[in-house]
Image 1 (cartoon, rainbow, N blue to C red):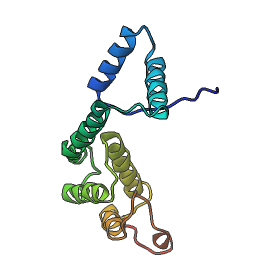
Image 2 (tube, helix red, strand yellow):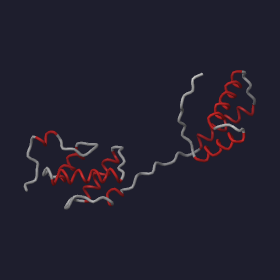
Image 3 (tube, rainbow, N blue to C red):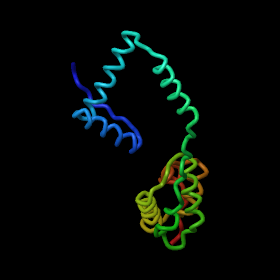
Image 4 (cartoon, rainbow, N blue to C red):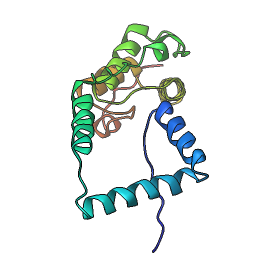
Length: 161
């Protein structure tokens, strides 16, 4: 039978337990889980259910139902405070941009924040764009990243030097 790779997400505690149980049987973790699944398949195939099996399954279901889901931890606003913004750029507008991205489901990590701030500086210094107006427009149009809108390329929205 052809073997395939499988990814499984689990807590560190469960992984440690799995590893210990596999070592107790002198097996690898993958070999041990394959043995457990094969045994379970054979047990079900032979319809060897006991009251204990049913109660165990019921307890597993109840535990899943009664276990509260972990609340998602919202990413902090550290990209707002830890990034060197272009000179004269309003930090509150930068914070509004970070919050906008979070609401759009795009968490901003520090590296990305640095790169976006550098891009803003490039747009302002090298190309002469009004970056505060740009950010306001991007938020208004629900943009997911920083870019110069096409209609701007044909208009005169650049700062006068």
